[in-house]
Image 1 (cartoon, rainbow, N blue to C red):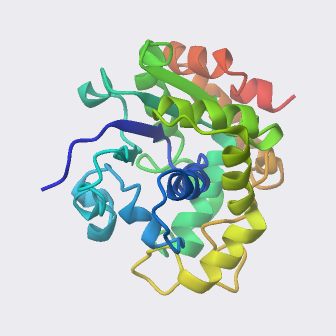
Image 2: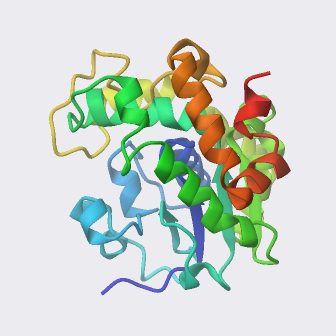
Length: 266
């Protein structure tokens, strides 16, 4: 039986969750003296997923948490779920990213990493389950709650620009009173280059044997801001903007944090 969750980090897929999981795991490892040899697979035993049993591998679920006997260590879970009642009162970090970049990153994840999508990126963008409709629905569900008292919102773009301050807000929201030096060390241990090196050795818990020599198949891929401009056709970009324009709630949330599609394209 899974222990109760103390705090959640919530995000749409491919919004920086793997990066933040590894950074938080490194921070927790040092702060609580766990002395772990962390890699991109065993980190799920410290920070598991709550995405539903059909949407995650068994060794990444809440039941895989390894530190229930340590009452001082917060049980932090990560979730791609749309807003629901489980997020109503616990400390929440809402991690968001420019939708077009999330879309491109998810395409490479589903096609080259997981091997579950065979068509091109523009076809993927219009897939009702994985593409633009899913993005709009996710952000619309969170709009009424992004400024709730128990929610701290952070963007991937903020983390990439000046990571220490927003990472500090994430850690504090999780109830961990870390020092600036501890925050900086956790981020250093979670640099893009180091995470790629670790992933090449351990993988990232995928059941399929993906090609770790293919940069586009790696879970830690380009880590770029604005890379979608080189990937999406003009028609797909226009369709993305149009789809968000039809959802007042989704547009309001993205404009609030300066990641709305029309702003990102300027």
